[in-house]
Structure formats: C-alpha cells, structure tokens
Image 1 (cartoon, rainbow, N blue to C red):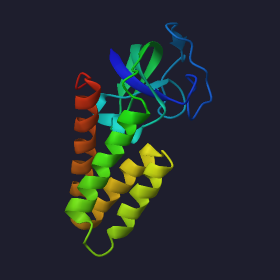
Image 2: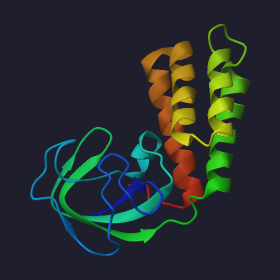
Image 3: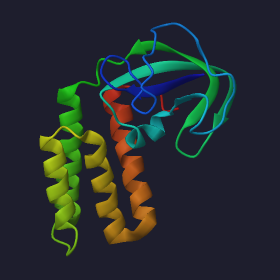
Length: 166
C-alpha cells in the first residue's frame, strides 16, 4: 500500500528520532497505535502531520487504518516528494491566511487566529498554521466546520502535490 510520511530534515522521524533508510524495509514487529509500527498517512490525513520533508512510503504486512493515520508492521521510503518545499508550503499557508481572513477575520474571537496564522507563517510553522485555520473555522461553525476546513486543506495539498487521493 502506498502512503505518505512527513519527516524532519534528513529523513528523521519527528516523534521517534529514527533516521529512515531510503528504500530499505523497516520491520516494526507488530502494530500498536502510537507505540509500535510504521506510521504513515493517506492524502486526506496530510494536514494533521505536516513536516519538513514529504515521502511516499510503501506499507506492508499488517496494516491498521486509524481515523487520521495508518500503522503497519513494516514499511519503506519509496521516494521523496520534492514538490513539498518552502515555496509550496508558504503558498499553502498563504491560502489558509486568505481564506481565514476573508471568511472569518471580522468575526469576534477569530481575528486572533488570523494573527496566529501570520506569526506561524513568518516562523515557517506550517502545521500550526493549518491547525489555527481549522480552529478558527471551529470557533465560528463548530466541530463540523473544523472537519470541513481540514478536508479543504487536504484537497489543496492533494491537488498541488499531485497525489493520489488515498
């Protein structure tokens, strides 16, 4: 199964600190959400896991689908998606900012989220900017609006990265 994996610079797992070998199978010895397994995501999950490097990963063995991620007993990095680079990440945050400012920016309590997105953009903290945009939507429209915003973010990323909508 092809999935996607965000890593820190140098192919390092942001939570595990594991340096991923390119093209080599990594065996996890089982699957236990957030504890054991090779974790990756579908295109629709990307906004929850944004990072510096985006990789296409192949998962094999036992594969368990969770609400916002996948976990497998083994996996390997297939190729780096070089399209995910600072200019595209900035364009993504710019889109978040325009949408949040345009749709919600004048609503009391939401303008702080706009300022947060601007600050996160300046600091290249793309994941936090995406979260702030979703929270702004939630502030205005409740939990369904949060989910709609995250789906919109995933659609933007899928389109601009030319990914399969897995």
